[in-house]
Length: 558
Image (cartoon, rainbow, N blue to C red; front, side, top):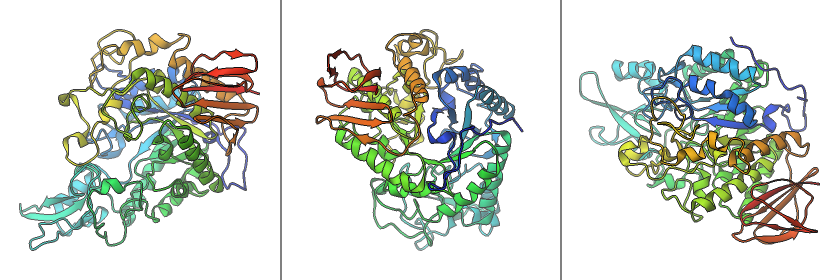
């Protein structure tokens, strides 16, 4: 059992909110996608040794915690989100000794470690599922998943009309041990990812044990994948419509955001609270409204939930103000911090989203105007880091990396790329390994190349090229995170005070601080708000006024 960071000395009891205040209330959490962060053994694939070697970089960046995407034993049918063994490390990433060393080193540097947990489904190579297939109909292990007889004369039709997020039906028919067609099993994602049946007590028992295993290893928390999906409506009723993906995020579905999930997370919270050091759970919960998202972070459930509504908001002052207000309003009654995120491993990087016209969604196939996208991305990052609550940074966004939109089809590995009518399948573009050095076969990622091809010119965006360079995006992030920690008016909180501003601008105050954002494509002259603390683009004051450049955010001390 590794050592653990002590709880912050400033932690206090907040009876009105129902939560203890803790480090997560204003944390900046950095997402590492292990296969694309750093390669420690030179095989072209990122690993835990690579992450461990780059921890000092993350410490210098100033983040509070590191969230690691899955590194468990897995056939990698969905980049590790198909877990075969929740207590083992996939050999491509290292071993449990590597994980232990990584946690220890992170704690020595004052960094916390959050690991991904995938409780909605396992791999089809999980021992439970393999035995369920081998034992055939009537196996007790089949009750731990959703096995059902098919409809039709000979059971040739799926049990209901649910569709997979990755395309096609959410059911696959099995073959009995004697070779005859068998029952069907449910998989809301790829066929290699059968959904657990959380009505079965063995499933709940197993995951409570998994939680304790990693908590005993010293991890500081869990990001819960598909937190909204564990419980399915009783009887698995037909949805009665096709093109179900278009309904996601707009309606409560019979397989998503069912009220029964909250009992599960209440039981998990009691386990987390047994451990020292403020261990947390973070919900990846796609819900129709931020109000429903708030249900996941009630005082006796999880600590944070991703704010996908904010991520999906266009670069528009009115839209941003509305989602900021709605987000803060939703979290205030449950005493949870609002979270803010612009990019992750499943969506097009925001430097590319903002380079394209609004309304194209979160997976975009065109590079757009690179200069415009970077300018807006820098401004959006300062806005995010000025808001009250916790912020998530996806690896490489601090370098201003764009999505790689021109990957050849033969290089792509996103499973949904190879399936019809599912997600767009272009998530590989945000997963290209990040550049560390100006030169080299993989720009410092590792000695053995890169599992996804990196674009020409990647080195000019590298850490080496930007470190210490005045005005670089990396130095902007370092300065912003440091200022956020140092300024008493930034970080945790539940409110902003909006100030009058011209159309297309946002201006809000926090104690001793003002943030002004110009989302328009033209400079706007406004009154000086105080002393410039930081800006996403150069600004110059002229007496009592300042010309705010297009697509620029300014932080002021007042």
